[in-house]
Length: 89
View: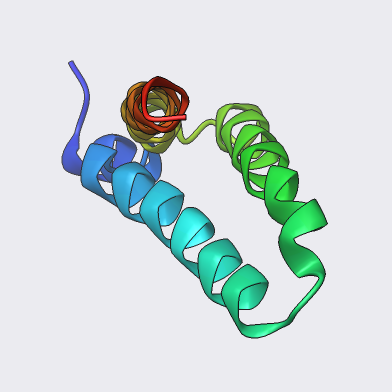
């Protein structure tokens, strides 16, 4: 039997999804505003992976699950866009 305080300490799935979304949004804004920064677009997935590891180390189980869910969504979206770009090449 767990009480409400234990569940709050484990985080939120929606918080994890939001954190993942803002990681990619901030990286997109930084890369699109500064010319020549396109080389650093790979930093967003690395920061995302670090956030997942950090969430699970700190015992924020549901936040880590939300980050993993968004990682899957981002992977599918990036693969689809990459496939579209290659098909019209």
